[in-house]
Amino acid sequence: MKIVIVGGGTGGTILGNHLARRLKPELKQGKASITLLSASERHMYQPGLLYVSIGRMMPDQLYREEASLLEPAIEFKVDPVEEFLLDQNKVKTKSGREVSYDILVIATGSRSAPETIPGLAENSVNCYTETDAVDMFRTVKNFSGGTVVIAVGLPHKCPMIPLEVTFVLHDYFQDRGILDKVKFQYTYPIGRLHSLAPLAEWTRGEFARLGIETETLFNMKEVDGANHIIHSEEGTQKPYDLLVAVPPHRGMEVIEKNKLGQNGWIPTDRHSLSMAGRDNVYVLGDTTNLPISKAGSTAHYEAEALAENLAALIKLGESVTQYDGKVFCFIEAGKDRATYAMFDYDHPPEPRAPNKAIHRFKMAYNQLYWASARGLL
Ligand SMILES: Cc1cc2nc3c(=O)[nH]c(=O)nc-3n(C[C@H](O)[C@H](O)[C@H](O)COP(=O)(O)OP(=O)(O)OC[C@H]3O[C@@H](n4cnc5c(N)ncnc54)[C@H](O)[C@@H]3O)c2cc1C
Image (cartoon, rainbow, N blue to C red; front, side, top):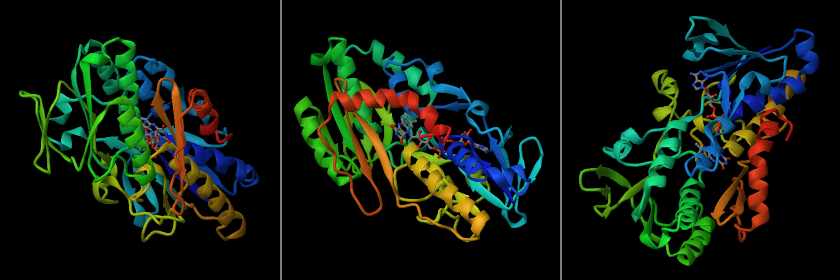
């Protein structure tokens, strides 16, 4: 049984490691193999980019060699897939190799796409790539006061970033002693302050306490950089001195090019994680079209459920579990306090008051992530 995983990020790495442990006898006897094809030899802990954007972490702290995270039985190649030949059960890589499979798992992640909104890329800052997070730090460090507008596009990676970036910037300007010169205006595209209703309510109280102004139903249309104004689809506009964006996201171009899903989102069964219309192709993490958070914890819980099922399919010919939509996200809430949101398909989050203990746990998790990627947590 030949299993090929495409994508060595959170989902692909955790899946590979769990599978390698569950299939130890089959791998030893040559009855199964696991190949992981990725686009980079390095693995980035992406949540750390939030701290890079305010100078509290250095970019090089966020990386590990992917090979060092993987069980030795996994064949790991840095050779990105360019063609998905699903009718022939094979993929073609950049180096020209054709890799056949019995089971394929696609976990290629997502990318921020500020270029889809005219003027946004050139006139705003964000923390979604290493380069963008470093640029954001340089910009906020030199900011001397004025109106900060936070503008959010959907869908985007990490559901908590709009809130977290607002809280950490509020802190950052307070620590620099310029908070009295800064006015925050938080906007959100739907009719409340967050897509998860209980969190929207929680945010209302927290933002009111900090004097952060808000506007809902604000969908970015274009940015007029010359006049420092962002226009919304709804016909409103906001002048800004600093525009902080959570850009809309897309799946990877290779998914779009191979027509596996519109905008790079692959139609996926919400419980089995199989790709629509394909029995031997599964999808993990950001690249699914599921209407749930595009988060590392989503990819993590999906990978655990899928590893259990694929191992059972190989050993028993039957699946044994279902992904239940579980997501767990920490939320940095400012002044070294944090809270968290845990939810699934049937249970909404119940946000609690933030405290310093949860913040400390989140900081510890920045290191514990590597144990989690190894499939040990
Ligand atoms: C600033 C920021 C803060 C975040 N904060 C949190 C948080 O607090 N909590 C949380 O749960 N999540 C958070 N996330 C989101 C989380 O990092 C992602 O949702 C998660 O990494 C998605 O996992 P994935 O496996 O789907 O994709 P990724 O981890 O992005 O991995 C995709 C992999 O696919 C590879 N790849 C791409 N194209 C190809 C190809 N053609 N062939 C082969 N391989 C390919 C890439 O090299 C990469 O290794 C945050 C993200 C950012 C950017």
